[in-house]
Structure formats: C-alpha cells, structure tokens
Amino acid sequence: MSAAPQRLLIQGASVLGETTADLLVVDGTIAEVGSGLEAAGAEVVDADGLVALPGLVDLHTHLREPGREDAETVLTGSRAAAVGGFTAVLAMANTNPVTDTAEAAERVHDLGVAAGLVDVVPVGAVTKGLAGEELAELGLMHRSRARVTVFSDDGKCVADPRVMRRALEYVKAFGGVVSQHSQDPSLAGPQACCHEGELSGRLGLPGWPGVAEEVIVARDVMLARHTGSRVHVAHASTAGTVEVLRWAKAQAEEDGTWAVTAEVTPHHLLLTTDLLSGYDPTYKVNPPLRPEEDVEALREALADGTIDAVATDHAPHARHDKEHAFVDAAFGMLGLETALPVVAQVMVESGRMTWADLARVMSTTPARIAGLAGQGQGLEVGAPANITLVDPSAGVTVDRAASVSLSRNNPWHGRTFGAAVRTTFLRGRATFRDGALT
Ligand SMILES: [Zn+2]
Image (cartoon, rainbow, N blue to C red):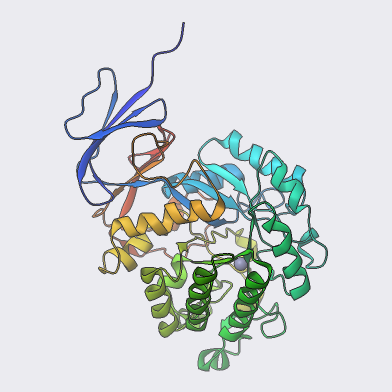
C-alpha cells in the first residue's frame, strides 16, 4: 500500500509580483499553476497579498560548525536561513577544522541533512588550512557525497597568483568555480578595518583602501581568462571593482570560454562607512562599509546585471568576540534573517528592480553559479516546490533579541523594513510558516 500523495494548495499568490495564481504542489513538486485550482484533501495556504518567489539561495554563509558552536551551528544557522526565506545556503570553509577534505565536506553536508531545514552545501577550501600555499583536496571534495563545486578561502584571500592560477586550472576540469575574498594582504593587512579615507584618519583606525580589493579582482579576471576557468568575486564593495567587472564581463561574453561572476552583500547595498564614527563593532565587517558613492555604484551594478547575485556573508560571532575595542573585535555581521527585507527596500521599493529581478539575484543566478540543479528554478510545473512567500507591506522592526541565530551581532537592530518573509517551503514542506519555525 502506498501513501496518499501530499497535496498543498497555495491560493492567490502574486507570482514574482506579477500575475496572481494558485500553485498546486504534489509530493514536493509544483504540479499545477493557474487560477481557481481545486484539490481535494489538499492543505490550503492563503497567500492573498503575498508575493511568491523561488526559495532563496545564499552563496556565502558562515555556519561556524565545526569549531565555534557557541556562535552558530548548522542547525541554528539553518533556522536563520529558513526564517530568511532561504532553501539553500553555501557554508563557507573557514571552520575549525577547515573544510579542506572530502570527509570534512561530507560532515557539514550530513549536519545539514540532519537539520533538515535548508540544503546546506559545503564550500571547499582552496588551500589546505586556508594557508594559501598548497591546494586542498579539490577533486576529492567534488567527487564526495557533498558534491563541492564552489571553493573559497573566504576570510582570507588566495593572494599568491600562482596558487590562484593552479586552483582555477584544477576546478575547470569539473566545472567548479573559485570564490575569491579579494584583499591584497600587503595593501590591506589583517588589522585593516575601516575604509581608507578622511574618516579612518580621524578615527585613527587602520585603513582598508578600495584598491586592495580592485587589484585582486583585476588580477583574477586575467587569470580566469588565461586559464579559461570561472572566478566568482565575493562581497564586491567598491565602484572600482564594478568598473573592472563591467570590462571583464564584456570580454568573457565575447570569448565564451571563461566567466566572471560577482556578489554583493545586503549591508554593502545600504550601510555606509560613516556608521563607524561611534566605534560600534557591530559595524565592523570585511570588506568594510564604504562611502555613499561606492554604495550607489553597487546598487547600479546589481540592477544592470554587472553584479550577478546578492549573498549575505552571514557572519555570526559570540558576544565575547565582538564586544571589544573596535580594532580588536571580530569582523562580520548577521545577515540571513534580514537579507530579503533589506534588498527589497534598497532595490524593489526604490523602483530599481522588480520582484522578478530580486528572484533572479537571490535565487536563480546564485543557484546557477553554485551548480545546484534542484534550486533556483522558476515557479513552474515540474519544478521542486522551493517557495518563499513574502508580505511586501509587513512593516517589521528588527529586534536583535528575536533572532533565531545564536549570535546577536545584528547591524539592522531597530530599523524598520517594509517586506517580510512569511512562509518558506523546502520541497513542499514548510520550514517556516506565518512567522514561526515549524
Ligand atoms: Zn570574505
């Protein structure tokens, strides 16, 4: 005897903010899209007034497990992802131990399966121990059950051009991509924490000049062209980077044999460097917050496709790592739970992008960059029912205490946003519903 099919009927959603339709989900797959759908025995979800988007995909999440389970775990980070409307997250490799072997990658993958709220896809380290010298087990990680396709030493830059070249050559063989944390270590050392300019001078904080990012982006673009491989620029933060990307993407498109993609974080789309004037470590992040002209260039680049995707760089930190004098505090901010409201405010409510554009930069394109077949598909018949329902006019004020993350380093505390995620479905199963985890 086989079990009866599980039916879910989402009624009256505004699909991608465009047409209103019902979505019938049968056994985790979208079976029908249309108006006035009926399904006997289906669980009905009233989506009147809600925008339906494909489940969000984050190319850049720090889940901290193994090693710093006091800041976040795969389970608590998965909860934050579900609350944020995500159905897949890529877990960065800078854990302890580092994700630089097939076994380490499979461990993270298995923890994600056990949590069961979101597809947790491990990112593999480019180099052993993130030391920047010897390549990690790139091929073995790819062939493992974790199917690692994105590699990054994030937190650190693959600074040696010879190592970067070899990594690009290596991942090319299986269609992998290297996601680079672009920070020339001699132009911006480990202490660099404030955009270099008048403010860093006045505050006496070590400067992190935009050119330290731009020279690495320019170099990597040339290495991608030389090797015929794929490079991804993590957390682009300056107008100069946008200029290089614009040139490189035009070149790559013409050649058709190599590719460069880029992401921007929600915080670099909205917050500016002047927030550092009170020395609040909540705003300490790497790369640092930039001046308004950089922020404006990033918004334009996201709208016109020069920047392909939004990625959170969700970086939870325990209180005792963050509550220090500014120079000694850890780098990073929470991002998963607030990404959609922030991007909606900056890009959609401002009229720069549509909801369909937002779906492209927060779901479809990141899934394509990471090679995730079961994610980022349209809300179409036959697609896995990874669906995020958004209330575009919820008007919610962020309270850091209400976060499901284990950490509290939330730069959005006290800010009010128009849009809010209401419900998240992972393959037809609600992981977050009407504002509550299930
Ligand atoms: Zn980084």
